[in-house]
Structure formats: C-alpha cells, structure tokens
Image 1 (cartoon, rainbow, N blue to C red):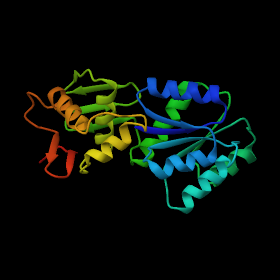
Image 2 (cartoon, rainbow, N blue to C red):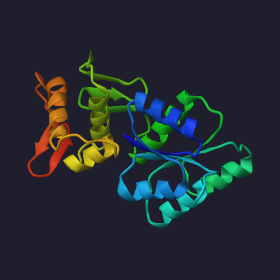
Image 3 (cartoon, helix red, strand yellow):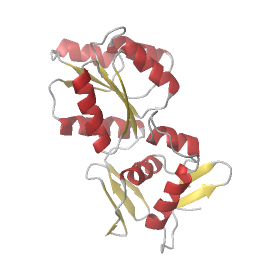
Length: 224
C-alpha cells in the first residue's frame, strides 16, 4: 500500500519513511502542507501521516482542504501536543487517528493497519479468499494451511487485491497504490508480478483466485 508522510522534521521524516518502506509500504514524503496537497493532487494514497505543525500550511488545514474536495483518504496526525482538547481538535478536523511524539514505531505501524483496513471495510488484519489467508500484522500468507513465501511487492499487491476482493483493478490502479513517484519501472511490471503471484498462489490448485479481465485488469475472486 502507498502512504504519504508529511513531516517537517527532516530526520524524523527520513526515519518514518525508511521504517515504512522496510515494513513493505510504498512511501512518498514531503516537508510542508502545501507540498502534501500537491502530492495528494497527483497520486492515490491508502493513508496519510501528517504532522500538525508544519510550515506554509499546517496539518489541520491540509485535512480541511482534503475533506472539502471530497478526498476521504484516512489521515493519522503526528503531534507533540497531548491534551484532550488537542486530540479532539485533530479528530474533529477529519483525521482518523492521532499519535503523540515520541512514539513507538510498532504502534505507528499498528495504527496504519487499523486505519487502512477500516477504509476497506475490514475489521481485522486477516484477509481471506477461499483457503488463502493473509495476515497483515504477522506479514504471513498461507493457502490450505501451507506457508507461501512472497517478496515485499508480491505481498503488497496480494494484500491490495484481497482488500478489494471481487473488484476489477486496472494495471494503473494497482501500480498507483504499490509504487511511489520515484518508481521508473517498465509498463508490464504489474503483469510480471501477477504472473509471480499466480505461480505461488494458484499453481496446482483446483480453485484459481487471480483472474485476468481482458482489456480491464485483474480481479481476485473465489469463483469465476
């Protein structure tokens, strides 16, 4: 999944970005509120991490602008302020969650999982289709009880497809949610990764889960 990090403390921004990338997320980062809105105009994100106190435009006004233009991407605020009033202000502004600095990165990752799965209509970290199970918290995949080893990108694509089970996803939409703006791969990269996933997920199985919809993209569904 793809996350935008807007934090003006450059060292913290860099650390958050690296930790999220290590956890398998695709990340774009910026250092002020105006940049954040520019990134949101240009790309699709599964979640946004916003520092409240930023130059040019603060996090509260960024969220207000997002919601005004009907952008419902979930937002987690980062702030050094920890009063009840500050938390209420942030949540009332339209954010889904609020994390006080300094924070543990395991907690940040857990909160990201919660807000992204809620957006997709899921109540747990475990996603399933037939006998395929993906646990986003443990970062594991099994089919029929057998463990499947996936690369970070394979895992991210499979998670995105499971979160949108039954929906046809174009190559462009998958790419926009899995890679950041620094990506410069080939036009057939999605096809290549889908082929890898099919080999690991569907080969030898009677029920195929990953299907091609000619001219439109791919869909993960239990019946076809």
